[in-house]
Image (cartoon, rainbow over all chains, first blue to last red; front, side, top):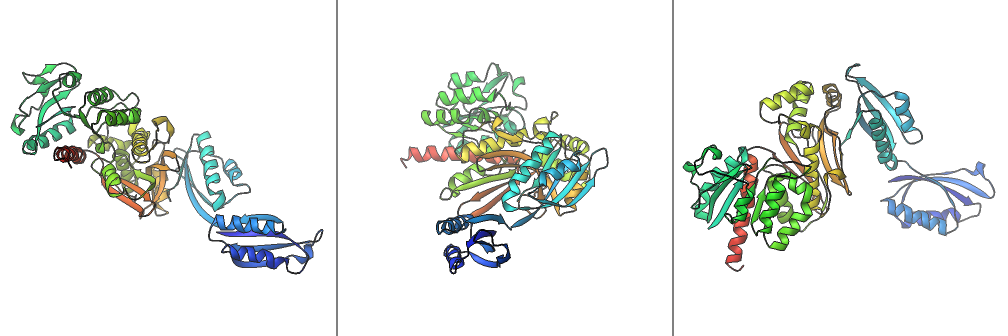
Length: 155
Length: 328
């Protein structure tokens, strides 16, 4: 899994190396490092790392290791995106649909069919692997509330 | 000689009876043919040319309850093929319960009793030291339970999913290939004898949900009931929606699944090259195994093929009896 880690690095030589060691020890492969030296606040330099970890457990171990060595982890974000397609049979407003994706996914395309007699919409969206199930469940709930059927893909 | 009776003299009962008249050499005689209205007893066993088309018209037909067959000790093995009620389990539940209590082995294709009282019946069979076999309840002739219990016993089942209802699969296939609306595809299925006159159990996903319950209880050690399954049928699926799926190289199928303790039945988008994407009245069942990975079984899920599953259960019981006689 690919993760973006934002660390608050104390502005002292050698601290980045400590964090990198923890990542390497847990099988992390560093894809990129961005040092935001100009954003230095309160003695900390925010550093963004994109890392490929073998699994979530490896990532969690690395994160714990980094924090134990005194480097705060300011944020994490999954960079793994999945493209999903669902068909919603029935009539549903696009506004309500868009609300489901707020902050956790993006609609790539919307296609309408079936006319007014038997309407459906085909929704293609991108979502992080972590949010996938939550978004699908929210869509299912929305569909049910509006007497629609959500048809999701069988993996 | 093992004396066998069949309760339920419909399509399956008649087909099975025909096969069982050939079993005398194997030590099994078909001695009772019963329906909910009564029974016909032949102490020496029916022959294939002596099988009545209508048991109630036979001069020796005894109008009574099939329970009398059990109480009078007329059989050692009872095959229960009565029409199922998935909410009460009756009348099959009473027949099976009473048979097991009386030390009679039971083979059944009746889903209702197993959906309503799976643990009760399997525990009862265990405590009485008799067999309760139900291969025919899921996937028609597909050897789901025997395969899982015998060939897969060294591995662990992680999840199960499948196309478990031939009627809805036929309807969805006709909608996919011919663009038929649901009501027309349903009428066609009814004309072909694939759908009941009241097709609601199929269309609303209840039949698939029953099979999901039996699979979960029998193969994953669960103790679930029909109300534990999240069910959505195909009544709202339109041919336009299927067309929209088709444009993406997919179709819509009614999929039953057991995954991470969640039991569900719902219309799903399935890629046309997915192993579960079978058409017509076929069924498909996929096991996800810890070591083996995915294993998919495809076969005819209803009609004559179900007799194959019933015979497999009967053969298995005969083999067990033979083995215990020989002290193996």
